[in-house]
Every structure is written in structure tokens, then in C-alpha cells.
Length: 226
Image 1 (cartoon, rainbow, N blue to C red):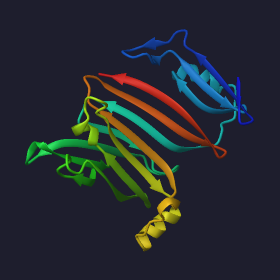
Image 2 (tube, rainbow, N blue to C red):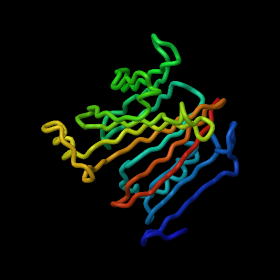
Image 3 (cartoon, rainbow, N blue to C red):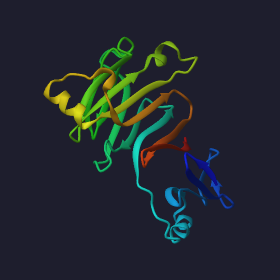
Image 4 (tube, one colour):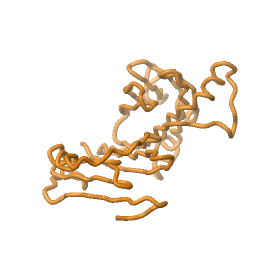
């Protein structure tokens, strides 16, 4: 048990029979649970093991998703799923970087949500940074991309970064009515950050930030796949 900001945090785990695949993270035969002030915040692992923990009738904490970060490598196509608001629809997101009529020397970046292209950036090596506002679930979502290191710094990091940020309802109304910005006063409610690099193997890593009674807590889970 640890204490942080007057909250008591308890972590329970069982890795005795854990089984592993190609990475250091267990794939089954384990469970991990986190309690804050005697309320269940996170539980991961095999269903048969988590059921035993849930039978203790521990109350569930009220949490909200604030941000999520994912890492991937080894492919020009990346897919994920996300919700842009707490009770919103689960959307399929696809990010693709490929050559078209002018070949691979002039790659094109495409971002699709639910099989619908929301942005398409030509001559990506010239337009390696940018942002665009899109409209999803009645919200204005700011989509930002930075693929500079893909082209000009592959030896150092080779990372490209994509971010989806939802604006608050107030900012959304202002954007729709006047298409004006509030500068430093802009507020965002949810963000999805994707870091993409080239590699022989594909590694997916997710970091989740949840809000618990106004406080933020980060939880991270990783997996490796060929």
C-alpha cells in the first residue's frame, strides 16, 4: 500500500502461473488489480482469475478517460479504436502512409475514421507537420501530425507522431459559429497520441490516463506481436 495526495493506493497481483509470448509481458494466467481508497480502478488479466477478485464486491471507482498513448512500428498502416467522449461511439481509426500515382518518392498520408477519409496529405516530405480540425460525434477534433523524423532523422529516432484532441463544448460552439480560436485559453477534454516508427517487429504499447475525482493517474499496458 502506498499513499499519494491523501489517497491510499493498493496493488494486488498474481503472476505465479503467468504465461509469456515473445515479450516480457504476460499474456494469460495472471491478474493485476489497483484500488484507490478501497475502490477498484483497474483490473487486468485472465477472466477466470479476475472473477475471483470481483466476487469480493469491491465498489467500482468513477473514472473518466482523459488520454491514451500508443506506440507501433514495422508497418505503413496502423489501425486502432477509440471513443472521443465518455459515452460516445467506438470508432475505427486507420493511418496509412503510401505512394500513389507519383510513386513512393512522394508519399501520401491518409487518415480514415470508420472507413471514411478525413484528411489526405500529398507530398508528405514537404508537408511533414500540420494540423486540421475534423468533426466527429458532434465534437470538433483537432488532428495534428509530425512525420519529420521519418524522412530527415531516421537514425536518431525515426518516430512520427499523430495526435487527436477533442475540444470542449464551448470551443466547439465557437469553432462552428465563428471559426475563431481562443489561443492559450483553448481547452481539450480527451487526447489520443500515436507514435509510429519503422522496425522489423511491430510493438504496440498503450498508456491510459484516467481522471479520478479530478485527479489524473497514468496506467500503461504493453504487448508484442510479430
